[in-house]
Amino acid sequence: MAQRAWLQVQLQLRVYVKMSKLVINTAQRLYKPIEIEINGKTYVVKAIFTHKFLKKMSEYDEAIGNGDTDAPFERLEMMIGKQAVIEKLDIREINKITKHVITNIYKADTDLPVKEKNLTGPGDKN
Image (cartoon, rainbow, N blue to C red; front, side, top):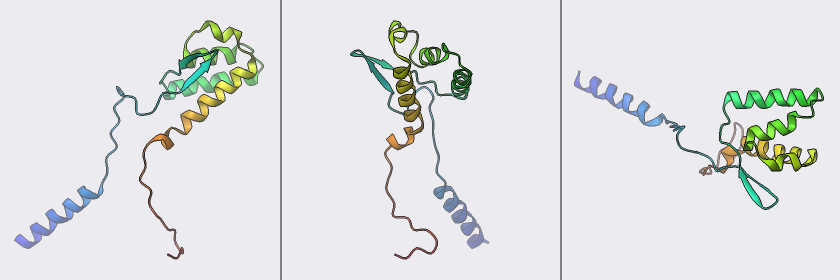
């Protein structure tokens, strides 16, 4: 009996040790801030890339596709706040900024330190 109980504890311990845990604290920023420099002044993109934020971005994209000329400027205001400099920007500059922000949102995981592993797939020979 004692051996069986010991084996059960050992098996439970193995399972526990192999599991990993991801801890996210929304009060702390996990990723580096996305910054934009316009005319020598640096603006930090709001770190609110929540479902609601991305849904609103999608709505602006749809409005832009439908010819709404205010939408690109409003979308940028949503990202960096209402700034007087936004009204001075050319639409091509707005598009470059938006592309920079979107690219950096989705590449955020590459900024985190990662241990490299030499993994092989099925059928690969070492």
